[in-house]
Image (tube, rainbow, N blue to C red; front, top):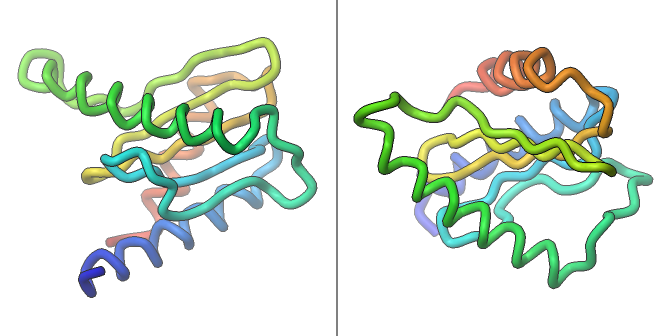
Length: 127
């Protein structure tokens, strides 16, 4: 791994640590463009809703979706975040460089307010 990558991943870990301190956040992790979790994970004491194989599949699918959305950046502007409200959790993704921050929260949050809060937190730690 290059020095630049290891520095970037160290910063990703810092960002995840900050996010996991927030109430309502169940999971915060960075997924690279190959769909591999490179930093972060579940908040201590949280039981994942899906098994390891399902999580791997979800990460790969997320990486693909994020790269496909970039095709519309030229006409619509870059994606700031995407969110889906599910019965048991809210899933939010934030494209950052060639990676994506995936955050899972409690299901009853105000998505837009929470997204703005997350953007503020991840903006505090510079690359």
